[in-house]
Image (cartoon, rainbow, N blue to C red; front, side, top):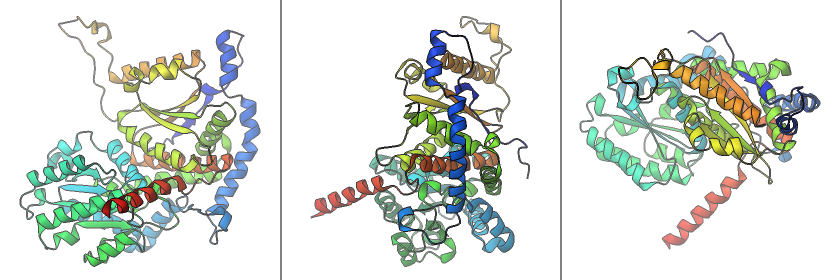
Length: 486
């Protein structure tokens, strides 16, 4: 297995105040950029928080005042790899790999039912690592991996109906592998209404298509807790125990991408999930062992905490410079919002895809309220050869002068030009830099952002785990449905 030699990095030098002659723009930068002294003053506290987080992950008995404490994700990647080395196919990772291999062999379409953390990580991995037209390709050009669909993440009647229409049109003979479809339903307790309702509907569709054959059991994979409504329903349906995959009790939904919640869909897509776990484990080691100067978790948490609290920039923009990573930005939106949006505190996340959103949000980011810090997510090396502008016999578009340039050159010019404009206007930016988009770098990146969010929550004085505000809407929704049913 080839892994990139280069680790991901966080480059924040562009938002530090630099010595320069006085100008009106320099005065604005002095006010809105981060002073090195402020960062230095915070460093000792950040290192203390790292020690606290490292201690939290080892706690067996959790004091009531610290609950919920769902720090299991920190050790999880290395634990999964170690368990697989010891136990092989009987380990959680071994079972994920076996189930995924069987599903790839048996189905041409695979539906992921889940909401929030139960699907956003898998969606981010799918969009980052698979072709943007994956579902339109014939099987031979998908290397035998199924088409992937995401549902159960909304209560939208029409999109679920359209999925069922597509399945009924394209799947006629369940004895043909190319006309079979499978489902994973992901819910820790099984009481999230949007997913539960979609699952009930899709169970009907499966029975209608497959009848009461073995397919209705073998092609359904519940990913859930050790108890709860989903497990009880699956057991009553006769789904074999080997088809159930666990969600650990000590890991919350938005931190669950390296549990079977993210690993099974990723493995069904044909991704190298061991490389993902290796990347995540490497990032955990950097977090626990590296000095601040080489520790992207601590750097990202400290810089963004100061920009939020000391420099009054509550809007945090994740500016994505690869369309394939937009869903990862949306995954981070949930991670940040649910973890830190508590007690009237917490930054507001925004995902912007560049250069698309330069033509919409760009005006506001450049010339609007000074309430934002922008973190660019940048990929150094594209996965495919450059598409060149080239020469044309018609030059009304005036592009022949750029004939030796390609789309990567256009993107670099846009990136450099945009960030120079932001710097000139005293709009602070920093860069998360990926050497390439790969399973290993995505493992690093997602673990980095999860760890940094926990550190920032501790700095902010809020519990980064749990989501009490979400529970309020769920309770209201159930109560209103009860009233309508009377």
